Image 1 (cartoon, rainbow over the protein chains, first blue to last red):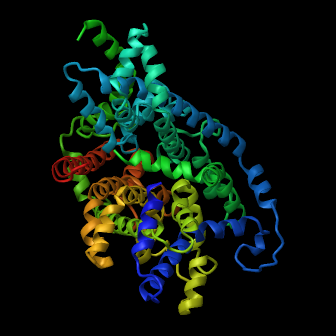
Image 2: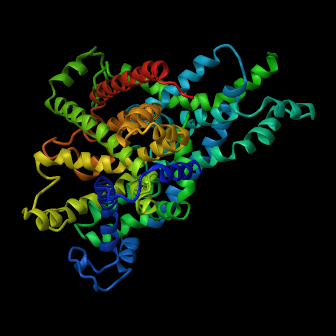
Image 3: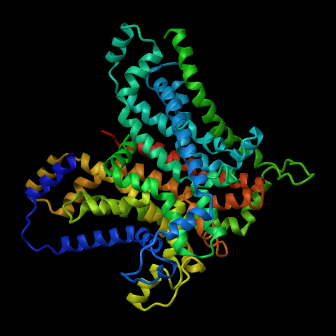
Length: 286
Length: 291
């Protein structure tokens, strides 16, 4: 990685042995930020794995327990919420991959009158995201009879300008010779797309997939507006309902529920840290 | 171009375009149309009122408060999150002790749902019991503070949560940009005997220009969109001290079911976002060159 190259260069050139006060201050500041950034999470972990009474008293030898997780799990239909979120995220991801691949391929390779204007119109969605248009989109969903369905949560996000943009950039870098070779062998347009373009764009699909899954796993406001029953609510809305209505202020149980709902993404992040970070980087570089 | 290919192109574009127009362009136009009518109530259907909804909005103290709050929210979260993100990226990219652990600590909030974040911080801010009050009590001997329950501190508390959530995300983009800077530039600067500060201002900062603009645009959008925690933590309170434009749209549209006012408010938010888009287009395209 080029990062190590920079570090190596810095090591060679910096005069090291001198006691450098500035380096000490910087290290201390970096760690202070690190602690502040991780503290709320660690505090919640502490509260969740100890009996309720210990949530706010720091006793290193407090008894450990998983009781809070069990209590949280049975006091709200979290299994159903997990299923809803899983269905939602999968549905959006599959739809995004199909729709964005087709559209990106056209924008990358076809040259017809109006293509530029059309692409500019697609990019409008980067700025004006569906979250902002919730009043009007709610009206549309009522007209379609889709209020309180999982489909309605996903529908506004399926044709993603971000996905189209990202895949178009990748497809544009595919050498035309490859496409021509495939055409000589008798491949049609669809076959070329599936056999030449899609396999070469695998890293982009991974990057976009991770960004999309974490965005929709975490999305809140639109699902809150469009759902009103246990059968459709995703985890985030379920957690909000649970934390505000069902529990008083039992922090141990709320912390357990909070960790539980974030666990899949958090575990995925810890296991695939490198891929996660690189995916977010890739998604950000145009 | 053969006609058959053009037909193929349109067939492949149609599904994406239908959804995109249906849920982005149509609602934007329809919002404007509906903002010119009154809210239908019971037996009274919607009637044409022209720009009355906008006039009422500008006489509504809650709207003015939300506009003001949102300005403060934007002016605080944008520079703070960008500056902290840059500092984090520089630290994590240097030879600092424990950089892997630090990178993980900084990035973790990015993968947490905003609702989970809200719960964590509610606990963190709890008067007397919360970690924040314990730390301030131990360090400065302060008494219990109702961080999110009093007008003076509530908006600041919401800003802190947003910055905490965003900075690690922006850090990643700066990190990518820093790692793309060729080491030869630093070597050349070292040969010239440039100081660390000089290298930073003359080499690093100019090369981070495109990344900064990309992050800036994202930060501006987030300043109007990142409101999940406010809806859970304060619901715009106390006394509208944390009401923002989007939380007020939610309140008007889905608590009071006053869709006409909500539409007018949405148009104002769209105008702000469109201005941001225009700024991005003009500045980003003209002044910043991507390699």
